[in-house]
Length: 219
Image 1: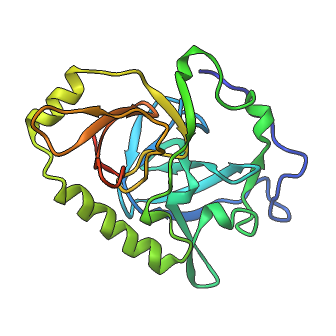
Image 2 (image 1 turned 90 degrees about the vertical axis):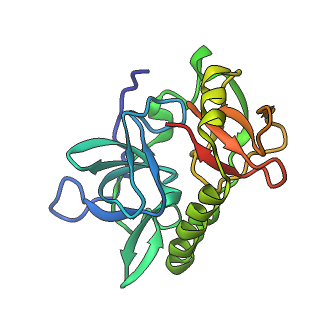
Image 3 (image 1 turned 180 degrees about the horizontal axis):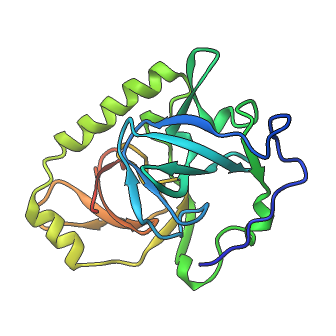
């Protein structure tokens, strides 16, 4: 899905510089996508605590173009923290003060469109790693990891999910362990397993049927 990026006339830049890079860290394993949206391909994954350089963000700050380990792509900024005034701060809520060049959303072609998107059904509910405070984000990263570890995902369950694809659903936000799946999204049973599953934002995921939280991402 090819999109043309046009810099906003209201882009925020440092004086005398074409753009400002900002150092940040992922609070959980985070998809690195080829564009700013959940329907773009995933060429890589930023690991929890992985250090990135933010190049720019879309105007609303939800998606940022980042560089990680020599690779450039787009990451969902609710799971990125940067140090502002000596405090870890979630990028999503503070993108403007970070002086990152912004890109208007409508210059990206209006967001999700076309058959490749599949069924749209609202937005993922941010997991604990999306907490507003830096300390809460760090604690949330540990909690998110524990959720996945406690899920008891067996190899036979992963194989079943891979071998039985279902209609994909694309939601605003990003697929991470601990994110909540809205009630309107259909989930499917895995025989003799304590989890259900769905295909969300290009990834098969295992879901806790009681909390509807994502507990495992099949990569």
